[in-house]
Image (cartoon, rainbow, N blue to C red; front, side, top):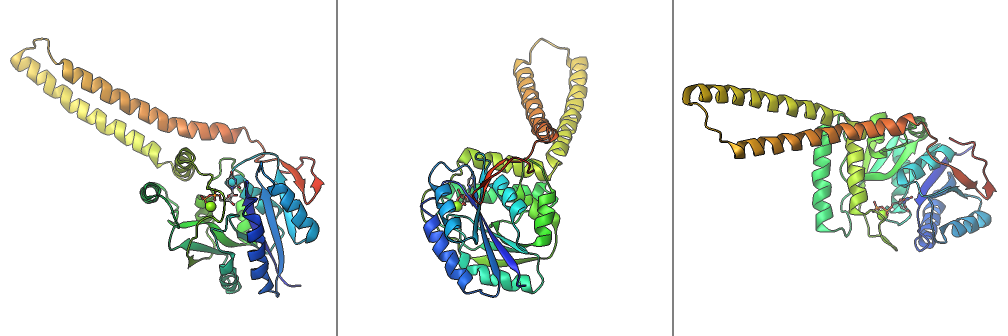
Length: 317
Ligand code: UDP
Ligand code: MG
């Protein structure tokens, strides 16, 4: 039997994008009749009519499947839910807003047939994004590549084709605070890069606020590296060393010249500086303790309300 390819689409309030998305996907897959297709949309707690559209699509064409999550879990978890339920020999992850053009799918499939397991798309151009966001993204990737042992590629998102092996590998990692971008490179396998031009959203607006992006950035660092902890010890060590030198200097100075009570500025500066460093390092440790706390609760990553029109009892991971 011919191979089955799943197109996995996390959806959060995308009712305006879905019609065009569907027509463009239909266009692309009609050009690849040698494969069987499954288009799996994951409704990640949409508050608009996205779910209704999915139900309709499934009723008209059973190739279109959907999972309705019990609430909004975020894209990372939505993708995990999709991968858990995908049946394909390969899974292509696609954004619903058409910023990832489905038209390069044939290219991905070709590379897959050549034996690659993870064909990721790198964008040439980030579309219309603010100047601030561009600069911050660049700084972030630089920091991340310094800190992390498994590199995260710049300008590469979740838009990629994953062989079944990669999907199984990703599904086996059940951490609830997921940073999938780090996981892709962690699992390894045969990777290949293709490039594309990123477009603007067709409708609606990005749900990433600056605050959300910042917490994703912290997530990315703390999930893939313990180097900030080492940095904290290094900082403590060098400051103690400086302090030791300073103590010797003070002792000598007092012995040689005596001491009139002075030095309020030095005292304040030292106290404030050390206080700041201590709070910073406690904060870093706190980030990791927080992660440990969340993972040890060992909760299911998500709950499903409905799959392809059938309501679920929550037996699923
Ligand atoms: N998305 C999701 N859950 C969320 C936020 C976003 O499933 O909580 C989906 C969204 O519907 C879209 C994809 O993730 O298909 C990318 O979202 P968005 O366009 O907001 O992110 P950006 O392109 O700005 O990175
Ligand atoms: Mg987008």
